[in-house]
Amino acid sequence: MSEQQPDAFDEIVDAQTDRDPDLAVIEAGSRTLRTQAGVPQSDAVPARPADPEVDKALREVETDLATRWGETKLEPSVSRITALMDVLGEPQRAYPSIHITGTNGKTSTARMIEALLGAFELRTGRYTSPHVQSITERISLDGAPIEAERFVETYNDIKPYVEMVDASQEFRLSFFEVLTGMAYAAFADAPVDAAVVEVGMGGSWDATNVIDATVAVVTPIDLDHTDRLGSTPAEIAAEKAGIIKEGATVILAQQPVDAAQVMLKKAVEVDATVAREGMEFGVVSREVAVGGQLLTLRGLGGEYDQIFLPLYGAHQAHNAAVALAAVEAFFGVGAEQARLLDVDTIRKAFASVASPGRLEVVRRSPTVVLDAAHNPAGARASADGITESFGFSRLIGVVGTSADKDVRGLLEAFEPIFAEVVVTQNSTPRAMDADELAALAVEVFGDERVVVEPRLDDALEAAITLAEEESEFAGAGVLVTGSVITVGEARLLLGRG
Image 1: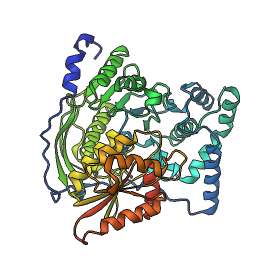
Image 2: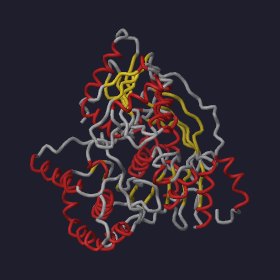
Image 3: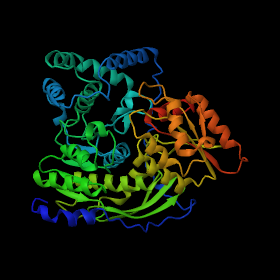
Image 4: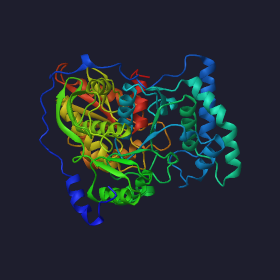
C-alpha cells in the first residue's frame, strides 16, 4: 500500500464503490445451515442480578458513574484516558486488538469478529457501546457479558486510580472514559488473547484510541453526530481515520467516495495496508433463508461458501464480509500468506452470532421486531432488510428518537414501509418529546397515519392492536425503532429482559 501514489486514488475509489447488484435472493423457506451451528452466543442482554447484594452493589456503581459527564458531553482529548492507562500500568498493551470505527454496523461487526476469534479458540474481550439494557453488556469476556460481580470488582479496583487522575486533570474522567479503563483492565486481568474494541464516537480523540490495533476496521460512514464530527462524510472520515496506526491493516467497508479517499490517504501516510470491500473481499452471493441468510463470502484468502448467518438484511451480510476479512488479517492471511481459514470453523462461528436489537424478533402473533436504527442510513438499511426478509402485509412502526438526531431523515426512510406510525418517547432526557416527534411525523406521513402515545408501554399496546386489526393470519407486524434506548426499554416491556 505504501507504494500507491496519490494520483491513483480516484481509480481505487471508483472501484471501491462498485458493488455487484445481482445478489441471489430467494423466498423465505430456503434451506439453512442451523444443523452446523456452534453454540449460539449468549442473549448478551443480562437481567438484573438475582442476588440482592450484587444488585445493590451494581446500582451503586451505576449511580457513581452517572455523576460523570455522559456520553454526549465531550472534551475532545485522550489526555485523561492516557493518564489513567499510565497509572494502571498500560493494561491495553497486554494483548493484540482489533479496533472498529464507522457510523453504522460497528456493534454487529464486533460481535461477528468476537464469534470468529472464539471459534478459533482464542480468549476474547469485546468492548461495545451503547448497551441495550444492562451496562455490563459493554464489556464481554469469552463471548458473554462480564458478570455483575466482576464488573463491580473491576470498578472498585480502578476507582482509586480514577480519583488520582481526576485530581490531576482539568476535567474529571467521563462516564465513557472510566468504562473504557475498566474494559482494558478487565481484559488484561482475564487475560484475553485478543480484544475487539468499538469506538464510542469518532476515532482520533475517542477514549478507546489508546490502543495500537494491528487491524483497524472501518464500517460504512454516513452523517451522524455532525455537530462533533463534521458535516460531510469526508470530514467525519478524517476524524475516524485516527484509529489507523502505523503498519496496521485497514479493513475498509464500502464507503462514500470522499470518505474512502480520506481513509486511503491516511493509510498511505502511516504505511498501512488496505483491504477494500468490493476489491480484496466482499459478498459473492446472498440468499434469504429461514431465520437469516445464506452467504458466499470472498475473504482475503479465498472464497467461503455455505455460510449461514442468523441475522436479517443485506447490511448484515456486508458486516459479515468485513468481520471475516478482519479476522483473516488478524491471523496474517492476505499480507503474509494466501490461504483459507478452516471453513467449517467459520460456518460454526457465523451460525452462532446474535445481535440483540438489530432486526430482532421478540414476539409472534403479531410479529414484533426491534431495530436500533437511529439515523437515516441505518433506517434505510433496516427498511430494506425488513421488507426483504419478512414480507409483512401491513407494518406498524413504533418510533422513539433522541432529539439530537436527523429525525426527519429517519422518518422519511421508514415512510414507504409503515402503514401507520405510533410516535412515543423513551425515558431518557435526550429523548425527543412525543408531541414534537408527532409534528414531524405528520409532515412526513400525513395526519391520518400518525398516532401519539407518549408512554412506550401504551405505544406498544396501540401498535399491536393496530396490527391485530387485520385477520389473525393476514401477516401484519410491528417494528420498534429510532433509538437503542427505545429498543432496550421495549425489550424489557416485552419480557425479554
